[in-house]
Image 1 (cartoon, one colour):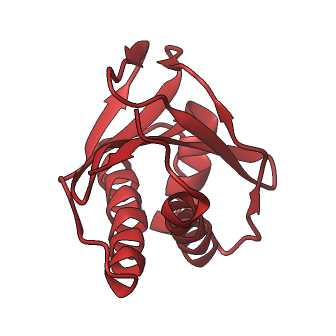
Image 2 (cartoon, rainbow, N blue to C red; image 1 turned 30 degrees about the vertical axis):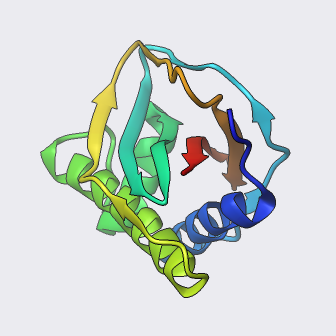
Amino acid sequence: MATLSAEHINPFLMAAKKVLQDMCFVEVSIQKPGLKEAAFSADTWVIIIGVTGEMRGQVLIAMHEKDACNIASKMCMMEVTSIDDFSASALSELGNMIMGNAATVFASNGIGIDITPPTLSHGEVSFTSTYAKSLCVPLTFADTTVELYLALKQD
């Protein structure tokens, strides 16, 4: 299994930080990364985006219900107390923006990747990748945490 270097991880982190800051008007802190099983509880929302091209795998963006509502409230500029179709669309678009920004950074560095449309999952679920371990990087602001899971390998 090939390991990803910082130059392959940082574009995802910088894109996630920038998009969250721009969309939620907050200062985002990147926490210590670690290998973690991608298993989620019943109150978790997960944005799943596939990566193809010179890197392959999945990126998962996970958050608890209250954090998803907090982010959706900021994106929709109105209070969101539960995730409905409108706020679910906003969360999916958040994933698109993060991954689109990351793809642009990779392209400027000569690495071509494509992304799949986002899938939004809610509830108890786990994901297993047979060819790449999940690197989990928590991103925090105010009382909100978003976990970015990178299960990728370079071709």
